[in-house]
Image 1 (cartoon, rainbow, N blue to C red):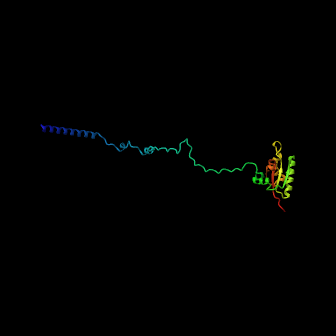
Image 2: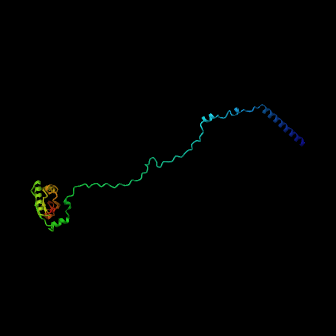
Image 3: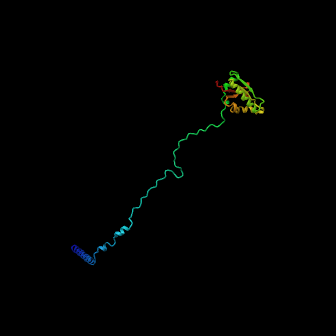
Length: 206
């Protein structure tokens, strides 16, 4: 029984192989080979290759660099070197000889250690009369080589003291200009605020 089944299987396989060969022969007999023109029909020509844009790779995404500082903050600026402060000329009244009279000198005049060479009292005179009288007095004292003088102006009524306030102007103008080196209020025993010490400039001996 086994040999019969094996022979039947071989005969069936041979029949299938014969049928397959016959079908392939019929298919190849009816097929026509492709020509060169038909085979290259679907390939692009040279003109099409030139006209067609070349495909480029998409650009790579680059990460944006963050700003050095946020928009709300101002950019950093190095501190500038401090400028030296400008020195403005001092504002004030012109120094007078009164500022140069030292307290020690005033004490010596008060005690008589420094002798007074002359004295003039301007009480009862007008401003013009008092200025003229003082100019003549100082001129004569300087011609006699006197140094220290006492000028009594008075304090004035009701504290006005016109002669006392006018004395600094007289010493800087007219015939008195340049003749007095320094001056200052007298000591109480010589009239206090109503009198002045004057130191004259030494006259050159010719």
